[in-house]
View 1 (cartoon, rainbow, N blue to C red):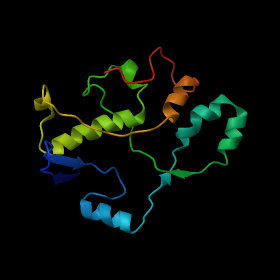
View 2: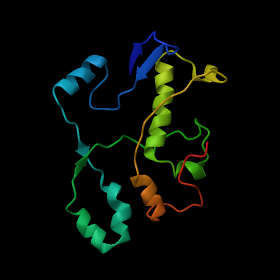
View 3: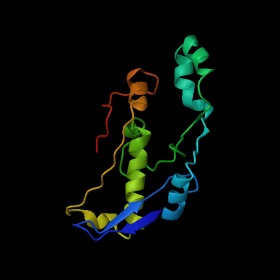
Length: 154
């Protein structure tokens, strides 16, 4: 976790929470970028199972797909109880939503800001995410089926 003090406007502290690749400071992040390093990992076999089970054609195509990618860590380890998210909803949350909640909380905590003291203040956390694969799995029925919208309810 990297913390940068900023004294412009009403924002006094930013936190950067890198996830993996051995980046644990601004210096190592900068070195990683300057060296134009790449850090793909092996795609876990279970990643493609919903598509393999859908059709034999999909299974044949998947045998020739890329074996490496930029894979997030333990998504099943998300603490839904901590964030007060019902079990019926958490199964339909995109991994980016889970990670965003964890990183926002960790960033505030590591910046020395107690998250529970922010209630009623003019505080926001901005995160940009774009992903359609998880919602597509839900729409196509290749994931657990529950009658829930495809967005976070809380």
